[in-house]
Length: 277
Image (cartoon, rainbow, N blue to C red; front, side, top):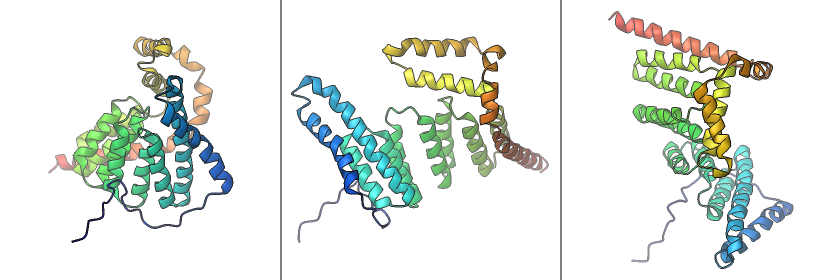
């Protein structure tokens, strides 16, 4: 018997699509930073002052490759995007955006298990928007009918204190699918309670500040200020300055509110119908 050909595990097949050619100028712009990264990664250990620079250059180069991959995804060039993202991970193996975009490619290709796999890798890293990744994982598990796992993902997303309206709404939809109308009612009501208001948005901004600066000794005062303001509470006077901006920005949120109110009414109707049986 001949030798078996080794297959790389990570290179899961992507549906064939045309690969968009990059211009010569694009390659020059791309390869410049990558040359610097290669040099610093090779010699950074032997030249101490290059070690930190190597990490910075790797981050910048991975970001540049990832942005090019996102352009490919928008154009439907999944093969090209996949290649770029895998290259970004060679440059910086812990680059979360690359994992997130790989998840997006597989979701758009209809391979939900593979999409979940990549998002799980992303959420294992230290990234500032874990709420969004956990929320997306919840949606993917729900799409597969794994409702309990979906609810667990949504609960983890809730723990960040961000995007609460959206996450509670998703919990309500899953509870409806499970026939838990009382829990669906609670979730939709919670979503309405967290709809965009000046107070809710300001609190979310403070929570995000705490997440971004947790453990950052250089900006410890920023972290403490946000923490103290949350513990102290917000006065109407402190929020008044944001009124005009919020009204302009979130005038369209009324549509989301109407949809949530309809979902809440449906959950209550189903709950009453179940009670009459």
